[in-house]
Image (cartoon, rainbow, N blue to C red; front, side, top):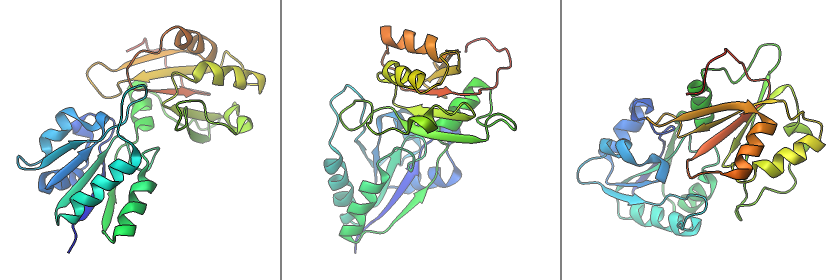
Length: 244
């Protein structure tokens, strides 16, 4: 027999945003392989005898390779245990879920996917705004701000990303945003387009910085900091709130 793997979306980090099913799987797990952004209070739901294994990746920091993470996941499952693969946000959104599922399928190991609160949704909630707007933002698009080398991905659909009637959310894009802003400007998106930077979403030290595409690109060209963040831009609602 082999074990069973539960891919659990931990949400943006606040343990109160975990689903009941996520808590149940953590409590019954023999091992939890967790991302950096899923650490902290969330792991307090794991059983006292569970093995806790950090396998997270962070930009600009030494991180385990994906093939090593997949190999560990298979090995723990083959030990006939109940394994939780704890991923930040929702595991199906820029979480390298496909590679890990492929490794499990090759090894004949069953699995389930338990969704979590997507970090993009949590970022909009932190800013006190909707992601969609009935007349001006009928479409939401998610895009990663860097490829496997840490650079801005090639072959981006600039026409879609410069759509003034779409809300766009950039994951892992602080370092590459100034260059992307230049490309978007050339594609016709005004630098005055509303934008916001949401850092450490749902954590006690979360911070939401509101501005424009131009002002945000200027700030990030000076300092990106180390906080995990999302960038939202487009026809964002503005209710006159001050920065959090």
